[in-house]
Length: 309
Image (tube, rainbow, N blue to C red):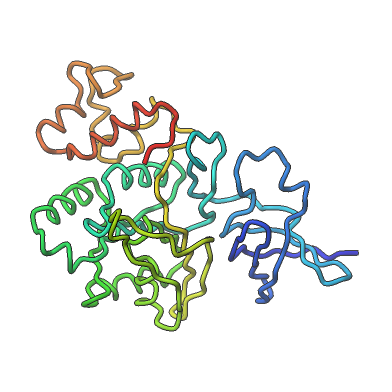
């Protein structure tokens, strides 16, 4: 008779998983067939970070037989026009979104889509501004970026692996709990991880000279145990971020800067698009809410269900 035990999923390759058993062993596992077909519309019913129940049979083969309830997760629409979703990671203490102003450019809309999803699913998020040594060469754009997100209430940490700016803060951040590191390909996720954990070798990629976009270097999400404490989930570079299961009337509450003033609107069902005496529109006009954030809100509100990049 197979014995059941619990573990944390550390790596997913699509068909095989690596789990960290509660007794400290790292085991290769497959997923029981009926678990994959249990009506889930996600492309990955078992995600990195999941707490799972596994069994080892008489042949010492390990099988994941159940996924325990998640405390939170980050999810996105799987692909263009897809009705399925993809869970990036589960049971995380924080998400760190690595963004760059140049080489490649991380758009405000992409950042805001990630932040909205994190807010909706209860994941605290910190923005790390990578390649800070390059960003300082364009002070006006740098100041605008910092103003937008610090003004919205988010912690923004400028980081440069070239001169070491912010690395100590990142080490401190990563040392507690489980952190998800996300961002476009080419923003320097793998390089940042190597700066925090020198003994950890990850593949790094360069930005394509033709497209000025990052090239994928990580194929599957993976959790790493850091020597300074904490667990880090490194993810594949994300090209786009499709929102999932967020109703238009709920969207505003996931923009903290807008949610703070929305109760002052004249109408309780205000969409913050055209209504008179709209506190959100007034705040945008007065500069208390960044126009970049409001523009992202309008684009998401007008989302026709297609996957936006």
